[in-house]
Image (tube, rainbow over the protein chains, first blue to last red):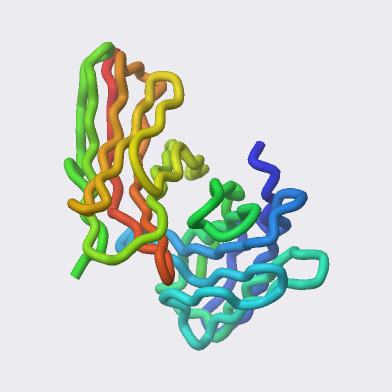
Amino acid sequence: DSGVTQTPKHLITATGQRVTLRCSPRSGDLSVYWYQQSLDQGLQFLIQYYNGEERAKGNILERFSAQQFPDLHSELNLSSLELGDSALYFCASSVGLASIGELFFGEGSRLTVL
Amino acid sequence: KNEVEQSPQNLTAQEGEFITINCSYSVGISALHWLQQHPGGGIVSLFMLSSGKKKHGRLIATINIQEKHSSLHITASHPRDSAVYICAVTGNQFYFGTGTSLTVIP
């Protein structure tokens, strides 16, 4: 058990819909990272928050947004869903920045868009 | 253009063999991570490196910053080592390799 909690574990929805994925980091970790893993693209970095502020941005679509709340949990919002958004979405946390600390991953949220 | 290249893509070994997985990168980095992903999806961080060498049990990771290259070694491989091993680098953002699928046969 990494200490990182992601909900929901599985989600099935239709094209055009909006979903919210939630991540609770390990106790004491200030950084939260979101990643997308699809069969054809592998793991891709979406976005990082550090202590409530956006720290780094990767290949995150404009239809996607995220935030980190004062209690340090984070939410990833995916809107106007397309078939290609079907993927496993991972959250990870670390004490500080990824350059100085180990990453701890949640079990992922599997999103299926029909 | 792939910022991170891993080799080999697939690897099959007999139990007990010494295994090496390579990772080359083309961007400036502040750290390199080796990750392990078992069937079923969970990801575990094995190492975080910014220089030199680290060892955990039968796993050894090295990095050469000048050559932009890292290696993950598994000594005395075991079937439970069967997994996908992923190299990731972090600088301004994360870049991932496509992974090396390792199967260790008893």
